[in-house]
Length: 134
Ligand SMILES: CC[C@H](C(=O)O)C(=O)SCCNC(=O)CCNC(=O)[C@H](O)C(C)(C)COP(=O)(O)OP(=O)(O)OC[C@H]1O[C@@H](n2cnc3c(N)ncnc32)[C@H](O)[C@@H]1OP(=O)(O)O
Ligand SMILES: [Co+2]
Image 1 (cartoon, rainbow, N blue to C red):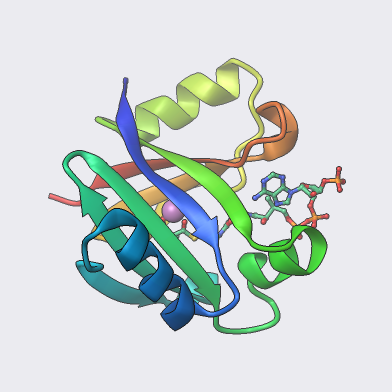
Image 2 (image 1 turned 90 degrees about the vertical axis):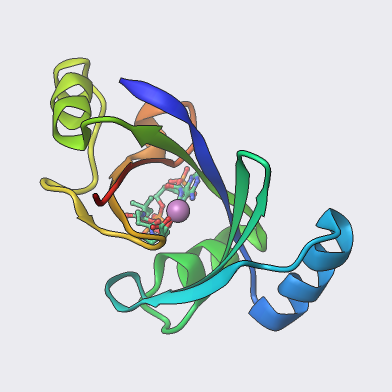
């Protein structure tokens, strides 16, 4: 079951500069920075009530974020939905014809298990599923 939009991912070239800009925009400071080696990204999270913004900076050229910025520039990268049972949701989406980018859930940022749906099967939007790790 899809519960809510958990975060909006924004690809940025300079995390410190983007943190300063979003701190001014949102009138709040990021609550955490976290590097996810497996994704070659450093993230910075802001929270306004139930809404989170995830800023993402590439830590290596093989990063999806590096390729995204090279191709499309900075901007909205993905929409993440919180799910109650990521395995059940992955199976439901497979059966519904969506292309999943990982066979099994992988460790994401902010204490989540994550999976991605290819933008080609979601009207050009990269979708992330995330489940809180209890
Ligand atoms: C996990 C830590 C953190 C968290 O919240 O926990 C994160 O969110 S990490 C986020 C970064 N990691 C990922 O995005 C992993 C999933 N992404 C991928 O596997 C790739 O980025 C993929 C498959 C979406 C694109 O792969 P790649 O860049 O190598 O291929 P192309 O450049 O050829 O792209 C293919 C096609 O897709 C379009 N594209 C790429 N990225 C996006 C995007 N973010 N949103 C929408 N569309 C996207 C790209 O433009 C190409 O389209 P085309 O029409 O052929 O030009
Ligand atoms: Co994300």
